[in-house]
Length: 192
Length: 174
Image (cartoon, rainbow over all chains, first blue to last red):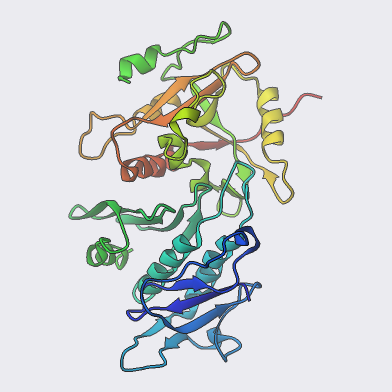
């Protein structure tokens, strides 16, 4: 197993723990969430993404249910997002200098935040185009006739949003995971 | 750096061809698949790293202003660098296994300089500076102007991906 993603109570911020990719073997402690976690999803090195005990959750919609259903949310990601999830997780396996231009792989914490966001927007958005940049940035992009949205996660915890729809809806700025204006961003993404 | 200073900027090397004029075509080398997606035929965001244009990851002590090695994203001036040299550079640029040579991405320096701050239309976001040196007189660097946060530089990158056009690789000599 390469990676575990663990759902947090509000099902928005997963943590990545367990076996780290080779490039991170020097790190003694895995990155863990500040909040208590439950319900784990496994991702194998082949990129398949499965619930514990289920061989292929994408045979049906992917879901996580907490061990304590009263306290824990359920997260459902549409099957159409499977390639995006796999692509996102593949970023953890990028080697040093992956682009032959000094490229560094995104940090696991960046991938985790991006995964949390992907899980959120999978509830209402079309599948975004994903991109990765050699300075550790992970981005999601949508383009439409009347607008666009780009949400980028940087390895210093900054989240950059460029989103516009028509003349009235516009979000631009540098945020963090907590200050991200989710409602306004969702309002735009839903229309793209 | 003001626009006037930018238009006059020339590196001190004796071989410097001088300031980069607005009407000059500049070239960005690409790698397939890292900065060029052959399926969509488009540049990817990795063609222009915002941290490199903003020097956020370059320690102050390492921010070279030495000609040919100064900070920013590298471009080539097609009026100075020959087609054969560009082809050679493109081949050397994509030497890693699984990398393929990509077309060149070209734009006018003036188009890059015309990318503006959305709310302050007089504010230029990117500058293009002569960085020519012995052995590589066509080298140029593109940087974000100081004083703008990452969202503006990312917006500029979004525009760059639209401005740059693809051009087939010239034939290498021999």
